[in-house]
Length: 349
Length: 268
Image 1 (cartoon, rainbow over the protein chains, first blue to last red):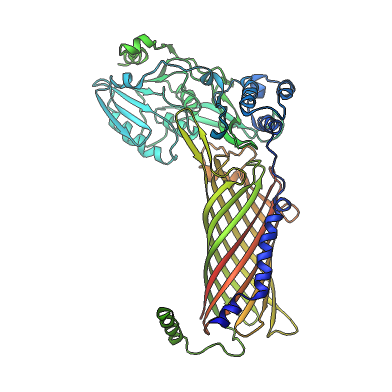
Image 2 (cartoon, rainbow over the protein chains, first blue to last red; image 1 turned 180 degrees about the horizontal axis):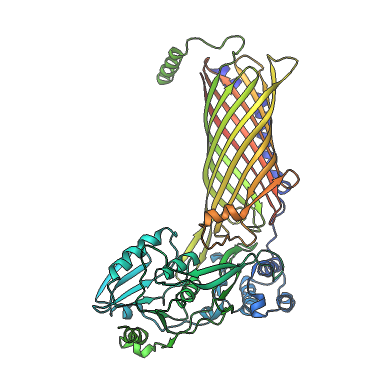
């Protein structure tokens, strides 16, 4: 046994391997390269450069990104605190006016979060889920993102909470839900809680209400360093899909909190002749957005696409106006009335 | 001690004789092993931070030893955690509560190698081999910058192998692999492979794969293995493997990993 151990831990092997492992730790910088230092100035520059490389709506919003760099960069010094840095970055990013943009500082820094766009600037209290659900005479759920049932014996209700599940989930989900509602003379599709997910999912669900093929929206993703560098245009179509489609009257309820692929869903549904939209304008944030991080470990989100409606126009930072503008007041909600939902019921048979 | 002696006796009963003065060339070997793996990377496409993955690697290798050749099939999965070296597990607040970012790490490689023996002065002690191999390695982390990260390399490699037998019961094996041509799959420029009809995984491969030769994609794989023959068919060993790679597009990635596996081998 002793002879085995001596041979097994052969002196030459140990002398070769152990120093090699130790040396690699010391040579890490040579092997992978230098990590970006975390100073306030480096973090500001990295934020600005990341948006410069990736943001998809500079042209649409007519933003002179270099001029903004020159304006805000001098405000950042080595002495800038984390709170001050978030404030300067927030002022820079406010010029983009984009719901998708956020900064999440490390909790340990004590610095506040930043949320961009109209949804970051103010809160909208024009929807109360509990009030809306009081109109339901039956209520069921499917999975983690659909609530459905009946508002009247003839009008169905479908609340699409998000589009986050795997694409393959939705075929069976919609077969089940629309299967139970297919005798309805009309359906209210609730989108006032939907803050997005995946465009492919949004398009598929809209296609379950389609009877003809129409272009719904296009999307181009940044693929180069110039603000005009985009990949091929992706064209999403509203067209009949799935084992069956519901083509009787539909009212889509929307408001400012409806954004991202919630809005591309509205874009897609507007191509269906049987659909009317009611409520307030949507949020105005259509792009895909990816998360990145700064050298100081802060998490940021960067929208990367230029999304256009079927008319070729961008509604980024504008939103989609409803066919029928109905804004719930706080007084009405407090008294148990959802005016937008009641309007929807009036519009349906 | 009694249990150990009983196990040794059982194995000795299964293998009729101890190792002879010159280790015979058996036809087949099956090796299994496990041990720690560490991967360090700086992928500037994904993050300005150096990420360190630590995991447990497992290995299953089949080798056919011929008088003039070696054919091997090697599978190595690894499971672990991938964290920014500067910060480790990070916590954030989202206005509703707090959440932590810590990434799981998954790694799987499959390699098929065929090598032919080269002439040497003392083949009883030193054998050299050269040949070709095909390999595929997929690495995935689910929260680099709080986003899915992946790297797949599938390639044709030049392979070299040296076997040194200082005593009949011991063998040192050194191996070296360098790619000649590889298909490298990474995130696209914007880190999001958008598609109207493909899944995210499908689009990751169709949009993110580029063919690269040695001037574009540099990679070195080197391993050093020691094994000791316990009985004529049963071996124990240890293997150290080091890999380094560099690829420049869309933005550069440099990474290295090292693993130290304990191994058990059976010849038949």
